[in-house]
Length: 537
Image 1 (spheres, rainbow, N blue to C red):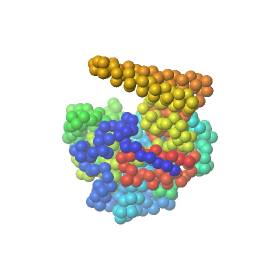
Image 2 (tube, one colour; image 1 turned 90 degrees about the vertical axis):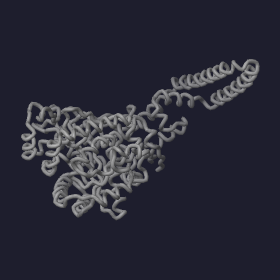
Image 3 (cartoon, rainbow, N blue to C red; image 1 turned 180 degrees about the horizontal axis):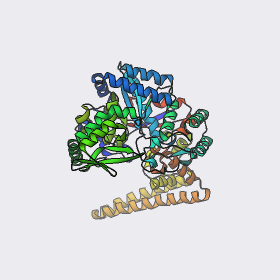
Image 4 (cartoon, rainbow, N blue to C red; image 1 turned 60 degrees about the horizontal axis):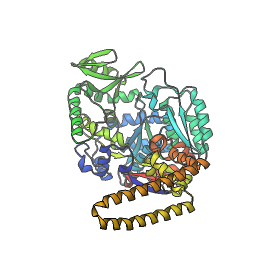
């Protein structure tokens, strides 16, 4: 396996705030209390205070949850470590079909590796994955794309009839059977049987998006002992009830701080990831299976058709905390109230959220974990590597868009003998024009610009002719189009980074289960701030 690294700043579509945090923490430290490095994680972990009774309660709930997912002995040992006082290295993601995009796996691997590093440094730590089962955007999780044999296959389950339900409560239903059968049929490689069994045992009609995801990840990360957390559990809501109450009691002050932070971000040249208005609160309600935002106006709170006074809302939280759910800015604060989190691993846009969430942490929790970028990978197979070498391409040529890729392919695809003639003739033309230009400029120096323009136009036309020749050859063979489609499908599918668009399972099947261990080694603190191009067998 080979590997090269690319700084995040050179990847397409990266939020400016995220890039600045990774490249130059001093420029954004007003938004993040800790530098994104392991020294900061060790300091936070060493000074972290977390109530023993809350630790005992949460560990007990997680033991129940992970048992229901089929947790391994390694996961149960990590739960014992958590109960005895270990800190948590946390990541999380929506519970996508078949594990969702590949970066969900990369998040888990980064949490596992950094927990190992802390433990090796003498600070007991465990990896925990927060499954975003409360999220109600089913369209984000009910589909996934596989790459196999150069083609993209999209799997998609039907939309739920009851719109707005938390995805962790939505059952997969009978359509999942055909999807699993088709997915298994597309697998190839040494780990195909293992992954096929994991899919068959995890994705059945009676499972929900949340439980199926949990069972799949419990199987994938059995050796690593990843702990999974489902926030829909009513027992966790009861533990978090004091935080929900503070979100209502301090709503006005919190909203003021969030609006101020949004203005600060804008003045600094960054965009606020979550829009906050004068009526915003940090909460949703989950009633009759539907998740709806809570808004505030004139000292009253409203969700759907129901309105409460502040006192009524507080009594409702006390009586039925499972009815309340955190929004995107509040969710990490609830997470770190429930867990002794030393570090959180997030993606680029997610990390940008924390610049807003930090004011909530300061007001309600009094502490905040270190926010670190998850490991990022693009998988490159032997055929793709061969094609890149053949056409003199790098992966950034793919990210530059189809026109740039096509130009490069057409220029290189001209037969060697003809290409040599192009090169020879172009060099001769350049030499002749240089001599002629020197003579013209001697005669009249003001014509220098015209000479340069003429030389550039001739060079452009020669290169254009070379590309047209390559295109004409491709029309006869079709090979160039096949190669272009293969590279785009693998390395920039649907004009997105591979890790955001493609499922990891087909890659793992071809690689073998040891691929998880290989990527885990590449997910440590020494790789923070880098995206890695990994060549697999």
